[in-house]
Length: 263
Image (cartoon, rainbow, N blue to C red; front, side):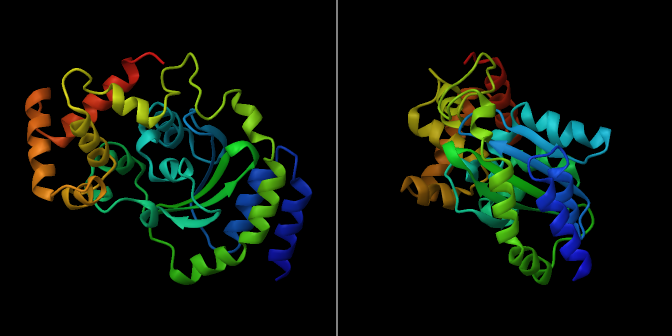
């Protein structure tokens, strides 16, 4: 109790200082140990802000730099922040679609992180900004007991982060629906509208979107209110029109389009 109280006291004292995020990470590690912390700020379609991370140099390239270059648009945490979800603690697997771990975002990007599990505190802020404090483990998943204990600390996380990052929306310099000179500051909706334009039908682009997000044919069918068999026919037609043979190629084509299309 003394250690927990001391860490919380240090966290509160650090509000408004450069040490705040490190103190937050330290307090949370006192409840349940984990390997890495990263805090991203989200605002609509804008490129995420790396508010804090404690990655070694090599891992930071994958977890932060590569992530900010496009893959974030298919990240379940990013997608949840744009809906938005209620503030609180979430496991990645709770937010991910049914085929996330078989999808190309996971196989082409997320698998590079080597994580056993990622969980995140979502803090909704004024102006539509959202802070996600991600806690990452490389070896084993969090236990149900550890998640319960972290959730019990939620009021402290919410109050402290809400006060420390209350002006985050102003740091983006753009509104949630505005793009900037960087082509990556576009919404996921715009990216999918651009992808395959003039080749794919609107329905086929919808199938591409939900497929790349990690939804199975059955889940896409429920979302679009069509039969799973129809979804599979659309996928075959998409592959034929784009002259590709796999979902991996579809993912690569999408990322290439995202990087090349001006805002």
